[in-house]
Amino acid sequence: MPDNDTGEPEQGPSRSAAEPAPWQSCITTLLEQEPPFLPDRAQAMTLLVQYPPGHTGIPPHRHTGPAFGYVIEGEMLFELEGERERVVRAGESFREPGGDVIHV
Image (cartoon, rainbow, N blue to C red; front, top):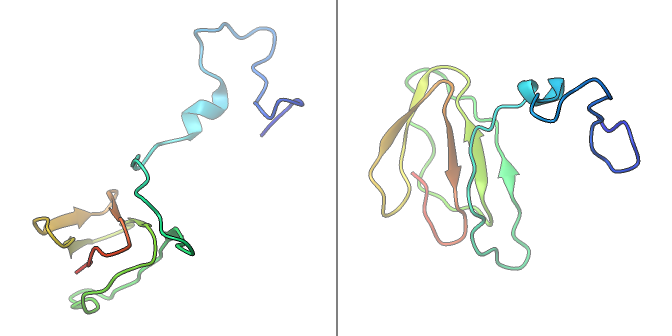
């Protein structure tokens, strides 16, 4: 949380410049992705998908903009048009670029 007018957390007078602030140990980057071109009216999404075990998923589809996901438990078979299918396991994240790319 910001503790000053700059919007940055204060590190306090006793913290050295080389020592990370306590809040930094609370953040884990799950996925970094250069943003794709986004057409007008596109929306970025973070999705919660709850398939029961053995579910076949939904038919091939597209999103207007990028979608980001994280597998909480289990695993799923994931494929983007033009890429090889892969298994995404619990603790892993994935992204769909949106636009014309079909997700299976």
